[in-house]
Image 1 (cartoon, rainbow, N blue to C red):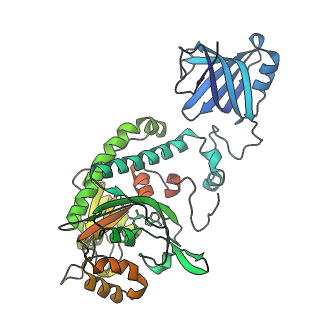
Image 2: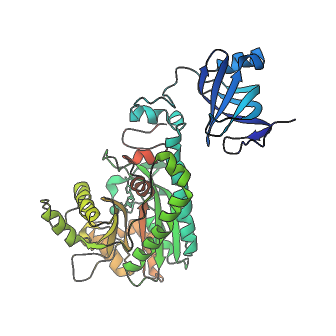
Image 3: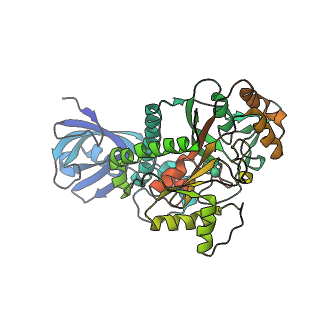
Length: 435
Ligand code: AMP
Ligand code: MG
């Protein structure tokens, strides 16, 4: 009888003999009998070793393995009322792939507090904890679902360069690299490229890829490398078309996350609550008034700031809204590619805020060549250094608009995580470049 290769998800009482591979999570030696807990991606399995009934050498090795060693255990599957799986394995053979050194840099099952830095320094070990892995299973699902929603709406997935010659979001957050002796930068966003694609006829594109920001702010919501979900679409009548598209994406993603992520959410003890649709629309000016009513005085043109965003989040939560738009930002606050609202100091731009935090910015773009060059100049930029971008506007550019959504910011608020670093396996910030 050959043993079937199983994991803790697939093993069943139908298997007489099975082999399971994983990490030795725990060993309890009770004299005449020992219990060894083997953990894999999906859960744990109890290996029960009665001293008298198994080979002495096998018993000896199995019961003295250092915790977290990697093994394959083969044995007989027996019914058990004592285990979560309803079965246990009586071992007949053991293969040790790798013995773990001790002490461990941090415990996997111990309930002691570990400093965030220790966790991140030993992320491989930190992620052996199911509740940490669950977040990344959900992140993977979230990105899949975004892809599905985009496909359904006929968006084409594209990839734009991450090594670029100029920035789109202002010079202060650019990382410079040496590109064959010339200066180049890590892309802050796919902004310029996704807009250029609007002149190709590929009139709806999206990208999910890394964006780099040399952010000097050491906060729970800023990192220097994040996953940016960008979309750009042509033939819009107004930025409302873009906003409706984002609402459709959220309407697709939220229930599917709750449904298809149920297992992982259970591990986290969390529930995903879909935001009420359609999202209310606040004008920037409304926000200033809302903040003033709470004693926070901002000048017209000021950034709402972290505190302002949080306060508005609290006010909106009282009204039962987790997600809401903030529109009509002052043109001066917005990048050159945004369309001005003629005759006003405002712009056709929006932010999407979720539970008191910006998760997306977007709007209608300036597609008219002359006006675009004019805006660049007004912002102190040299149109010559943007010539390959500008060329795409010279020979026929449709009206268009788009957005950038920070995937981790969305996930963090969805799961109410305390820090964006909890949603990035190997985060990058001002203090961290390894692992
Ligand atoms: P922006 O073009 O600067 O408005 O960025 C678009 C979106 O990317 C923001 O709404 C955030 O969700 C996300 N984002 C921007 N900067 C960062 C950062 N430093 N860390 C994490 N996410 C960011
Ligand atoms: Mg923004």
